[in-house]
Image (cartoon, rainbow, N blue to C red; front, side, top):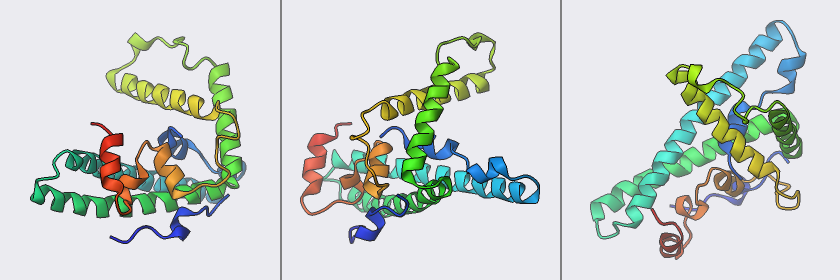
Length: 204
């Protein structure tokens, strides 16, 4: 399987979790424009979000298959299946990268995106969303599940954007995106000799 091209790895627009970041952001145009254009903009955002979620799920499945295969190297059939998953994971990663890049572009670039996420986290902390002021027990099971997901996402984002600015990259790359999703880049796009190293680094 040929490695992903450098063009795919490089920034088009300008860790964690990316999961919350790229699902939750909305285009500034949608908040400023009214009427049919705003509705069209919203539909575009919703379609992007659905596509992103689909590719994230496929990527996660492929990651799990890859990690499991690492412990079962003697199983030739499993290796064959895993290779197919690796191909699917590479496709999912590239598709997700393009979609995430498109969303970041619509926000004005990577630096603007990072700034918006920082502001969002400040608003979260200011409003004490994570401080337990909500009557959790009064929620339905579905609401509790969604709240728990949001809380986990917010906590991960807070950790990410509280890091010193010099730790955050100035570019949005495929490798950075996978790192933000807690996916080992070399597991999906292995170079020669990477597999053995990854087995030692990533325990299941």
